[in-house]
Length: 263
Length: 263
Image (cartoon, rainbow over all chains, first blue to last red; front, side, top):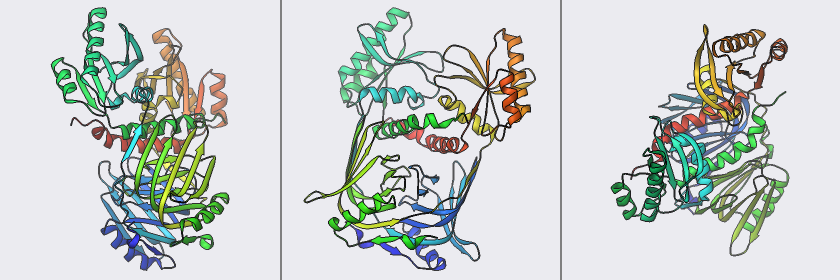
């Protein structure tokens, strides 16, 4: 473990901490600040968080998170931020100013007191593997069809076609039907042929040739070749991102009840 | 600031830390652990994160977050967890075992080394205020119609009706049309009457009485009275949750491009 570089500051004045933080941010260290702060955000929307004790994390890619002592979700956050400035303003406090482009966003954290600062360089090369059931992959994609293509409208899942079931049945923005077949692991030539059979059966039954899209985290070379030859489409899906949506969905299910409260 | 209670442990053995952590978790303190760990998750899906240096946060409501040194999003997380057990297993390490009900989920974090533990009780009563433009509120609701009602299908936004524009035009699951009017602040009687005019004009033009729903963060008593009298519906919207969706949407826009990469 590389904790040789782990440093802890407590009891330092805000002015002293400004210097420490400037160096840490320039070096792209991980920074954790526990302190009393207020937070202002301005972008397409705006927010103000009044004074309270919080944990502010600046990551090694300069993503910035403000966590309150409760709740799994940060109250303010920015993905990898373009500029983080640290200044000390007498009679104001220690000011963190994070600016982002596209969308243009300004996050300002003003610490009036800091209890602790931890600075370190963490090394994390650990691979992340996730296992989603095909059923869950299908549901996530059906609920977030923008992942497959913009303005795709899902008409159904597990649509019977011939002797099988196609995972997702949809309509694209030009009004053409789309058959989507998913594979949880590497898609083989067999998967491409299976999708082709669905397209053919659909064409015979409806007199319209639908688009066929095969979605998988990876494709065998023979699968890609077969897809191209049969005029079918394919998309690589990032399982890790599907995983994030899966977890969000689980949280959303819990919060749906809380969202609107008939008071 | 209540940092009287802020304690830092470094250089302690994993066995010593088990006792410290048990007490902290029982007391519902905030716990931050920097260490080398692997993470296993099992629920409807499953994930495995190999060894690496990370920041694990247990919040005062027992929400648990695992943060890698990069990325704004935690790699694993659980909202307020039912049970968190801490044990030391020789030749394995310090084991955090977090169990959740509904959905049933198990998160296991195994630390092989811990560089630092911070324990504290943070006090955060600060109010959070956010300002979303009505246009953004409308877009978020149109993109997440499940917030308004399950299986609601949005047909359009800013639909011209008579001399005005209704914010969201939708179809409910029983096939009835729905007119949704939004207010960014307290809805008054005037807002209820405005929605009623849209419903009336729509009825005359289409020969069908649509449902009318007024959505606002709060309602004047006279507004509620008028809505009820006119047979209109209403929903309280939690601006803070809309805000979270707004921020997620901004992130999603960035990541949409990355989602599927034609390799």
